Length: 389
Image (cartoon, rainbow, N blue to C red; front, side, top):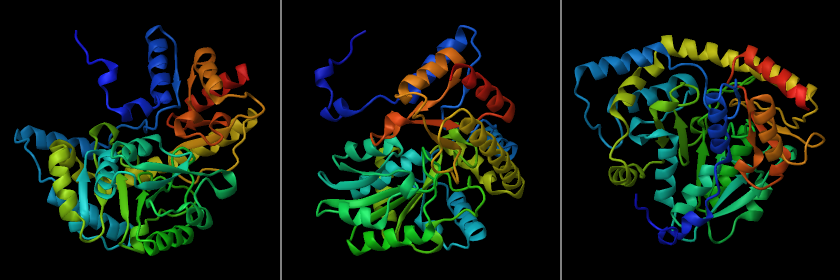
């Protein structure tokens, strides 16, 4: 089999680091194939099945046999359903005309970055943060300017930090609330101040809200209930439990819909038709009731895992308010979270994610542990971890 020599690759590919969690997942699957029992707490994927009403809607659509393209902006009925969801859940007026259905939240981020980035433009991103965001920006010859964040700032950027980092080349700011890997939420007054700062400097603000529905001990929020000059990314993957369906959406400010539509036409034509028709059932009363029950289960897991890992001597300097991750500091246990992650997998059969996947700022000190396993498995994982720590 012939393959293109490495020196024929685009230069941008030489700077892409490995996605360590995927390599750990591959090793975990190898161990499973050898008969080992592995508890998966590494991948950001809910363990619950897709809600029944969504599956039934998808099956009904497929049974008709007419599986054709939708418009590039998405199925009109689904865009309207998302608009209605913003109105009913958040009292936010988000016209369907500003909603673009995408191939996952990744597709939404891709469209937003492609539409806004010229070669050499700088984007301000938190470190730690979701690693793929850096690659989206660099794919369009943008430059990533890292904003180091830690427990003192709730792992979120502050107004003074963003103002100090902003330069003549800065194009915008990308934030996530709740965030991955820390699960922290930006206080809405701080987020509004950041949005004002970005607008005053004629930049763009992208807000990643893909974990929006998974918040605990406080109500879910959207910046769209307060302003309409920002780009908002959301997804059917996390709260709605549709990871493999690869469906998300992007809300754009007025005036951006047509350019985004043309980009979507060329980049991926349209999101999956079966996934879009299935997602029409995501906003039914039956489905939302089930999803809220699952959110309560996640909350109970969060409490149990927080208590358990602190009992192991790990530190959680800022408790997660959302998502389904705990970002634990391993100082005192191990000097390298990568070493600890491999030890946990090989010796205890517990798969976790090293901090190196999420940036460089104090990454070796941290481990991301996902509570995407039921309480029985979480308790067993804690027992196994205790046996080697």
